[in-house]
Picture 1 (cartoon, one colour):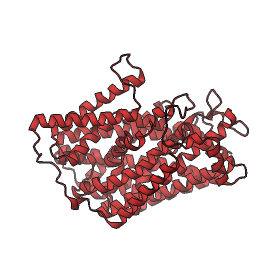
Picture 2 (tube, helix red, strand yellow):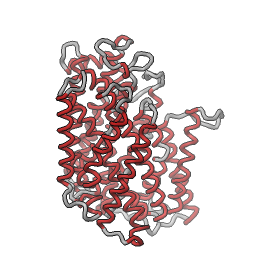
Picture 3 (cartoon, one colour):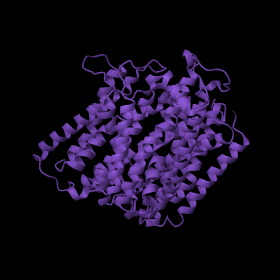
Picture 4 (tube, one colour):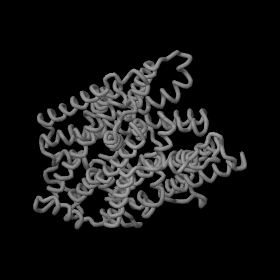
Length: 560
């Protein structure tokens, strides 16, 4: 099924709607840095919850997680379902401290708790991470998906897709700041959920023997029951490239191991995620938004992982590759099987009818563009508030309006760099897993610095600096064995989740030792004073949190 005129009309209408909403809601929001970077601290709970999910769900999930669903099965949904629990932890224990300190950025907390020097180091690190990893990979994945769905998948319109996505995100986010990003996210998240559900619905209809989606789901389960196992044993699932899925999702570690390191870092200390919670009307509104996001995270695997499993069944029936009716050979590898990360684009292009295809493509674009806009805004916020303002504003005599312009220029430069670098990326196989693994080199050390900074009043600034520095060689040590970089019995061969957990624990131990060697364990002057009242939450948050925990527990019990 080709992309037709009706699809173009639907997609263009969506694009105009998003740009129009973004420009409308951001009227008069560019006069002060609080207006531009924190949406005047006026966001209600439902906008926060929707914006959290829209910022999170990008091509990395829409395409990459479907690819992992194709290769690994439902077990990859642990990233989503455990994230719902992580959000509760963030709302209960992290947000009260962040909002009490009136933070603009996550690096700003480092200055409040440790020092300006460490804040600057981490601010530079995050800017580089956003530009060279996040923005670049989202543009690359997004353009690859659009080129596959709209074009022939041979890269003929790949560069045009990169530029189009970049300009789309820039059209409203550079002008309107966080207000434009957050309010358009409300529209985007509704669209991406609807579009994702349409894809899942149509795929289940096609795989079903009688056209009934419930029959289809039952038949998918009957054909590949191993793909619905949440806690994997060694050898339980061998991926299409011959790798044991246990190495990506090592059994119980997804519940009590390294997945917590990835999730706590991402949801608690990631600027482009946490920024919208800092822009809430109040702590209570922010926590309610967190609960809404938690419920949405439970739903996400239905629109990201399940289509990948369905594509696996359709593509590998009786061990062979499906060929009848397939028009796009570029979806397939040399062995005639769908390439992992082509699972979602293949379903969209081959089975979604005209009109609906435009809507589904708009949903995919919504996932990509909302994440791009969030990353651009956060890059601008960190550079402006953590680097430009403390070091250059006074010398340059920059006004509040000038700070906003600095943010816009910063975001523009970041986007240009990402556009240049995105085409240089090569195919990464299961790109979702790849990003998780190599983000895991830096996340354990940063998580250690934040966790001890928040909850251990004795942690010193030097211990934090050394924690950041030593965590990277520790993480790289654990990479040597699994990657075969050096033959020696001194190197262990562990899955990357175990590596992250071990790196986090070892980094905290080193920080504790340095702290005691330096001060003998004295409470630091800049430490965070905690009280029971600080962590009190309202009945809506408590009831919602209990419901999320109960649902997640039931899901794991059903698909253990």
